[in-house]
Every structure is written in C-alpha cells, then in structure tokens.
Length: 200
Image (cartoon, rainbow, N blue to C red):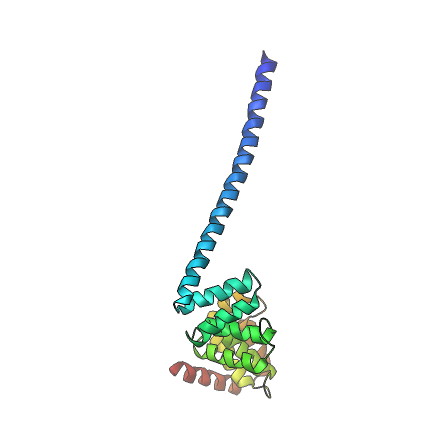
C-alpha cells in the first residue's frame, strides 16, 4: 500500500513538473507572439504616420529598417525624408552615419559632415561628439583642438546618450584625453565658444 501511494505521489509530481514546463513554454511563446503582434501594429502605425509627414515616425521607420532588417537603402530613404522635410536632428545624425560608413549610400565624408553639422546645430549630442572627433583628427582639414574640445564639452552634457550608441563613443574619455594635450588657455577658449554657442 505504501509503495502504491509512493508511486502515485511520484507520478503526480512528474505530471505536475511536465505540465509546468509545457505551460511555461506555451506562456513564453504566447508572450513572444503578442510582442511580435504589437511590433507589427507599431510598424503599421509608423508607416501611416510617416506617409502623413510625421518626422518622428519617419525616423522610427528608419531605425527599424536599419537595425531589425539591415535594409540600409530603405533606412536611408526614411532618414532622408525626416532629416530634410522634418528637420529631425536624430535622422540627420543617422543619415550622416550612413554616409560615413557607406551603408545604403556611397561612402561620402563631405555629405556625412554636412549632416553631422545640421544635426549638431539642433543639439544632437551624438552628432556633436562626431564633430569633436572630426576636428580632433582633422577629417576635413588640419586638426583644431579648441573646436574639438568645444564639441566634446557640448556632447558631454548627455554622455550616456552618446555611449548608448556605442560604448566606444565616450565624450568624457575624449575630454580627458584632450586635457592631457591642451593648454589651460586653449581649454578656456573652447569653454567661451561653448557659452557663445549656447547663447545662440
């Protein structure tokens, strides 16, 4: 009798564990399907809004095609519309990145710099960081440490946002490196340029 009860209890325990595992897997699959359905609906909504001229929806579609689909040609199309017509700073930055990396467009540093400048002028800290890199490393002409320091200071206001793009992009580290090679006078000149830029 004890043995029968033991086997019955063991059988019920095994059934419970199997049922839990199967149920858990079904629950996870249902959550994934719901998330995918939600994403599909969100993309449909962005498309509708983008066609009506919503720059943020155009930007989000660009992000979707760039990251989820690796379709750089379609991504740059949406970034270009948002950057040009909507004057969306984030789209201008993303378009600059595509030009710099030759993704969906020809590799074109002058075009990339033009879009970085437009985005940075509107306050996008990621574009400001890249302008700092460009001036520090002399991408277009001779290096200009004062101007580089200015853009690194501006981008350092939201350093976490810059690092979120790529952990290697860090305005705090860039400023520390510049501190080691710049005079105090030059750093002060850069700070004055930041104050003038902010005053505009």
